[in-house]
Each structure stands twice: as C-alpha cells, then as structure tokens.
Amino acid sequence: QVQLVESGGGLVQAGGSLRLSCAVSGRTFSMYRVGWFRQAPGKEREFVAGISWSGGSTYYADSVKGRFTISRDNAKNTVYLQMNNLKPEDTAVYYCAAAPGVGVILRRVESYDYWGQGTQVTVSS
Image 1 (cartoon, one colour):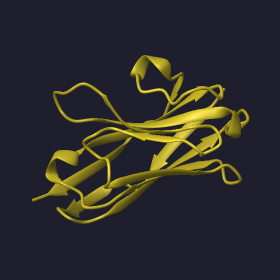
Image 2: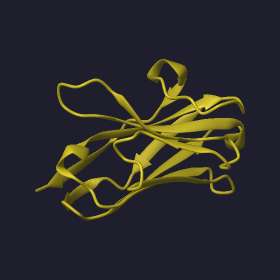
Image 3: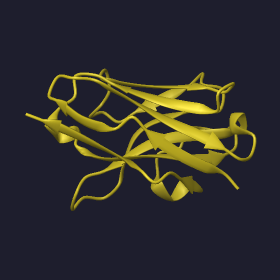
Image 4: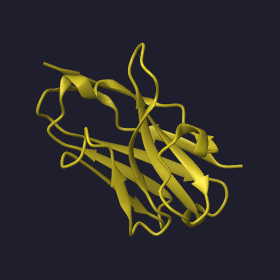
C-alpha cells in the first residue's frame, strides 16, 4: 500500500508562487512514477506535470509549461511542484498520484493507482 499526502496549497495573488509537496510512504518510492493533477469546480481532473522514477524525465501540460517545475527527492520520498507566475485559472484542488514502474511518464488519470487527498490552490486576480 502506498500513501500520498499533499501540502503547500493556499491563497496567493496572481503572479505569485507556491510550492506543493507530496510525501509518499509505503512501498519503494523510487520505483514509482509520480504525477500532479488538478481539478477545478465543475471540470474534469486534468494532468499538470509528471516525473519519471529517477527524476531524469519530466512532462508538462501546455498550460503550465515554463511556469511550473516538478522535481523529486527519492531520499526524502517527496515530490515537489514549484508553481511560479500563478494565474487565476490555476485555481483548483491539486492532487499527486503514483503509478508503479519505470516506464514512460503517464498522463491519464486512469493510469495512476494511488492518490493523495488533494490541496487547495486559490489564485486571486
């Protein structure tokens, strides 16, 4: 069993920054791919960023490319999402998710086996 706990959400003005953390416990963290997703009210959950098991590969949604950075520290069993130049349209509940394996970065919600409870990010204009 794998547990994920997100933290770092909050209220920030447009143009500001936040760093989300996803602490992972359970099985061998380094053997999991991790993704960040978000869900705004009335919308489907969408992929934001993903990182390979080693951290050597990353992938971003076009909407956040150049503003968000995903990273991981396998020694601390933690994945981070640095969010800069935040916009009101980034407002959503952000979730981290884990999928076992060392293959390609996954972008579909259905591909992930484990999910955190989510953390709210609100960007005011």
